[in-house]
Length: 318
Image (cartoon, rainbow, N blue to C red; front, side, top):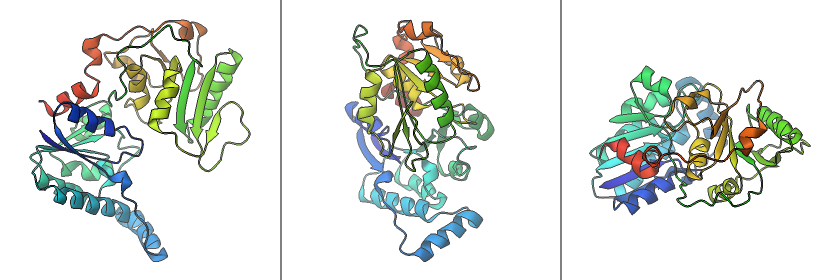
């Protein structure tokens, strides 16, 4: 198939989709529009954009992204069998709907929800088919349900290899940070080794020795090396969001246990209470016995549905 992947791939997750599809002999073009850098021509444009966003729900940046994407599509003279757009809400609707002109089928996938990103709603009619990782949005807007995917699967894992620390987490500064620090306190009291990074660009965390405050993002390849050195990942889900984060699928890909605040995870076919501990965000308790328990492998027939090849096959019904 001739496939174009359009995504705002600032973290690097989606490049793994392109590589996996190429490995399966698809002809793939990846337009990563996070690389298109918009600069306001003047202070006037910045003020103008503020009024556009506030009163007219428009944005010069999303128009810029849309224009650049169409220019890239125009360069490819072959009509595509499929164009998959991820983060389509970052594209102005008048441009998003034109993507259909370059393909037999235009599909969108959203791994944010409409409560957190209401601008998603405006672009839903722009695509032939829309998938979301948020079950509530699927019911409300008649979308198709699709989780995130495993991008980092390792076939042979040495479970005898000694880990550098037990629990790992990396996240951005925000509402979840206080809970992460609280969990760090509990792990310290239990003498459970951990490594927590909080991307804190504005340096709002002051003099806290429990976590590592960083001002530069860590590449995904380095994040995965930290995951490999741990036994358990910590996942703190966002408020008003039940869709499963990439932390869940990173743990599956690298055969790690998971501590999460997302109670909806128990409704998924890979859930195993031996591997996954659901904690209360108001009163997080982490039993030492959970940390000590060995990981139990997920059956291959279940795991394969979440690896990129299985995820994509079900997405387009090949």
